[in-house]
Structures are given as structure tokens and as C-alpha cells.
Length: 141
Image (cartoon, rainbow, N blue to C red; front, side, top):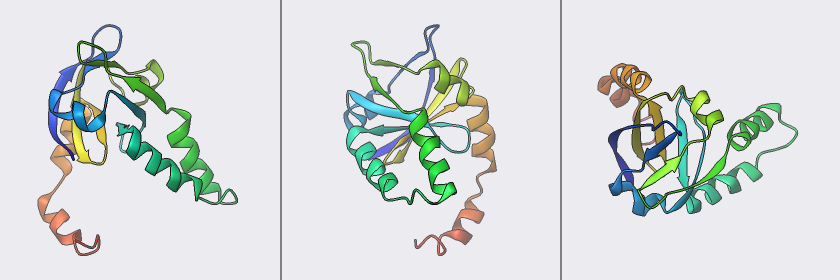
């Protein structure tokens, strides 16, 4: 399971180190794409296949479904971890998530999220444990 929070920096070529604790679960090759809330999502190849299968079931006749599929697939790209443990984040995805220098990589179970450090810190401050507790029943937890 992908979990934890890790702080890293992009190098001048747009590469970032994949935290060693996450490498085994994410794999040497993985998929990264635009995510929600201003971050990027990274999926292992197995989890990406599962996600793609769900996307294939969405109705083409539904405009929201088409936009959902476009959003996730248009920026999706396969990444590979190099011998130094780094992977390249393509420019279009760095721009989409406002990644400039300092990044935060968080594990959220089946995927990773890659955040601009400042945006993550603001988002993290807004997360209220009390609000989450109130909504747990609605989420089936």
C-alpha cells in the first residue's frame, strides 16, 4: 500500500527522486497524469489498468463522462525510474500541477499524489479531522 509523505526537489531537467519506500509498490515503470485538487496522480501499472477498465465502462453519450476520460487520459504518460531513483515529470504535467522546485509526494493507498509544496501545505491545513469524522458514515467507513 502506498502511504506516507515525502519532500523532494525537482532538478533542472524536471526529475524528482522516487522515495525508496514507495519504489517497490509503484514499480520501476508507472503512469502519471493530471490529478484532482491541483496535484498529479501516479499509478502502478496494475492500478492504472484497473483505472482504465473503469474508464472504459463510462458512457460515451454522457458529456461529463467524456470530459472525465479526457482529463485523465490526455496527460497520462509512462514514467520509468532511472538508476539514481529519479523519474522525469513531463513539462505539461509540471505546469498542470505548478511544480517548480519543492514537491511533496504522498501515498494515498492505490496511488501517489505529487504536489507543489506550498499548495500541499495549504491543502493540508484545510483538512479538518472533525469534518472528516463527521463524513465518515457517508463514505461507508
